Image (tube, rainbow, N blue to C red):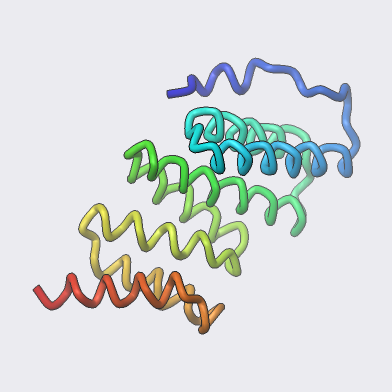
Length: 154
């Protein structure tokens, strides 16, 4: 696993970045992380998403746009953590992502997945239902809800 201190010790590529430069850098790191996910390089994706989060924390002012990018970075990092069998940290990232952006449907889905894996069936259902309130046609959430309902009938 990537050591978080390594992420924090790397300097920003721009000295005293503007808000726009900081947000763009975070978006670039998210894209790079997504590219690593496509290659199934989970550790590098984790590193890039974490680096984006750290940069946002250190260089971006609180705003809706900052919250949105942080929420996306967290929910994407949660996917990676699930792939690395780090289910509880994935759930924690999803919970933070939802607090930052309550419309992040992927965060609800991934939180539901994590809860199901942790056998928190009721919580999993709550996340799926809450996500479907935002996007009632979301196929992944509907499928997850069916899976959850199947577990409850045991």
